[in-house]
Length: 304
Length: 241
Image (cartoon, rainbow over all chains, first blue to last red; front, side, top):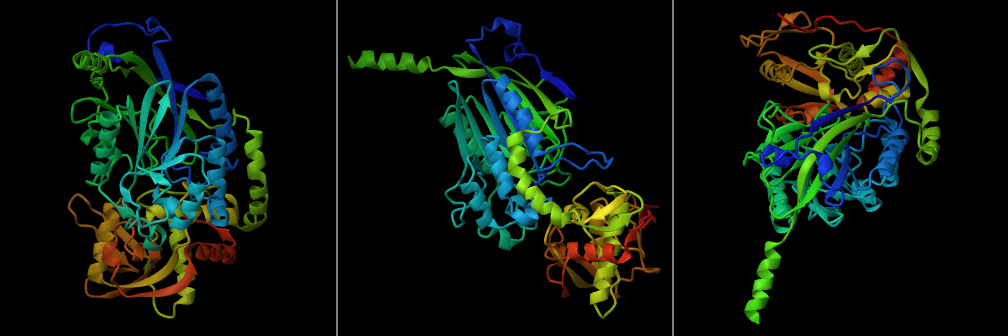
């Protein structure tokens, strides 16, 4: 299997702070909890692999192969969280003819834990999206759309907290401006609110009030723009409570996550894995029980 | 007693423990042919797929050479622009000067040479956008062209030449053999998504327009069915000076 592994940071937080240089093996396994995060974005109704037509993507993608991969990882790892960062829908005739039911059913089967809403997820209308969310076993997250006058008012949440062997993982969702991107009749009365402000407030709630050990933002803002539009990199720089942003929308294919310094100089990782389910992203986090939080700063290289 | 309780509380709170990230690493997997397909997932998909294949497998034409998506000009873009202009002209009694599909609206990176199927056209244009004719004066066209060149260039129909001189901000715009004249009137074919202000084209929202009651995708399908053999070249429709 063509599997490339990129060890991004083998340095521990302790080492970064210069407090010691214990190799990982010294952390007894009962003190360390490992969490494996898997993620997709912009799958765009690519239920089947790309056809074998000699093209660049031939044979890549496909829900049935992704499910095999996910199952294998679940057999190897105790703690797995699986996320999608939006634009589940639209792009192949599966969506034109079945309006997204199969996409959501397959995500249920693969046991996704949470997802955020992409602009194209409104393409069959907000009522249809609400039906799909009602039929799904994973939590749809968004904290910057006011959905109180829409069918999504009860089935989309700002955040969800996962308990992974007592490690608290806070997950929130954030979405892109809909006006100009989605026809008004499709998104209905969903009201777009400042994503940077709302994501940071929600993240702060998760970290400071609910004492989450890791805060993950599922984003459909897009990785980066030349203009001053809100993006994952902008959000990362402005944040003080987000540890990891998993993104979508711009179909950005990152081989390694981007390391960003937040406004306190602490590290935020930003990742995105292209589109169409060609890749599955994976991040492993190791947690050790401690009395006091320590600041984790980015390594000096490759920081945006 | 209260003091002791308080003390216990303080000690307890003081001992509140966290889980510190001590290490992390990242990797990705390619969902490739080395992986077998999950049989349960296959069973879920196959009834949907079988029904779709009956409709979508229909061959509607032949593609001589691969179409690819790129900026500022591409074969895929030229094909789409010419196809929608041809279908628009058949339905519109007056002059249509050009067509302008948006770059982001081309939803596949390439179409390989060989049979063109209905599925190819659905994947190229999955949205149910309709085509409209928008009326502009020359100054509006200049604003539009400045906008799309600022975005890296959009597909445009045969007959338009955009010569980019972004450094000096002196792009040349030629429509059907003549320099763009700011006071002339022009008509162009575009998706209702763009005419409604999509892709930051809000300046088009209040312009006069005529509906063609034709889906963008149906215009492509019609063009392929009528021409049967599709062969597209790069023609420097948009180029750097």
